[in-house]
Image (cartoon, rainbow, N blue to C red; front, side, top):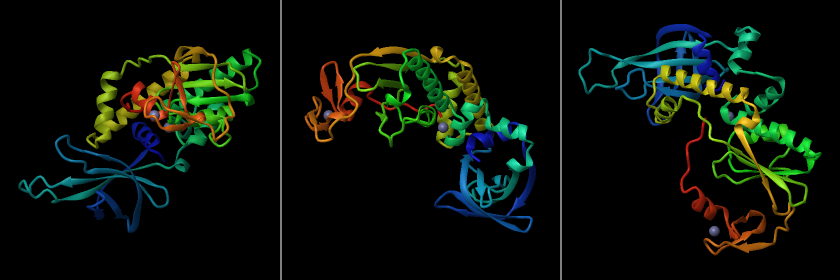
Length: 321
Ligand SMILES: [Zn+2]
Ligand SMILES: [Zn+2]
């Protein structure tokens, strides 16, 4: 179970409350529980899904963990209030709840927590492992590209794609358009942008989809919360709420027609698809040789990727997910 699925389960109350004191082996170096005993059974933690605070003023003391056998538990260390300050380690562990497994849920609820909407997208989600905003963006870009190619009477199999990000979106493109890094019909230039260039055949024509500015209306809440979670400073309630915001974004994106998300530009001309590997050009930025297939022409000057990245973006932004 991934984190987003776990948060949805907590939101929907697909859980079994336990609320019992338990013995826990805690690894201080890793700052994570290693194993715990419950009802005479030893549970070995194989993955920490999330770290939380139960009190704003205290460090992270609660853990959502995957144990061997696949079950997911939430446990926290309860500080002993009676202890004088300075004896921070005094307290006890509480096993708060367990998230119900797929087999314990009716099929309808199972799909609900995975947020599976339509069958085409189900294939993408199955491949990727979860549904997230970037996966939907990749799916929408693919849908748009398929339509534009069909209108132009072009075969999908002749198209090469350049993606300007290395996010979950790539999985949607690979599944829906069959262009993969392996078959060399998908190139990735990670500028952290949702821009996708589609080059048709070996010809000089193509088009580019770029994400238009999206306003979700939750930005004031979303961004500070995201930073708090990234810094392990959030409570479980906050993370559950954040997943709700993410899911709202996913729903909004799924309901948007592709033309509301992406702007289409004609790209003309673009380079040849198959490049000899021994052909090098000089980068105008660093003066080093760069494979022609990896060089980028920017307003008549040739750059290598790191130089262009430095010129164009300057910094790396947080991802949506
Ligand atoms: Zn993802
Ligand atoms: Zn360079």
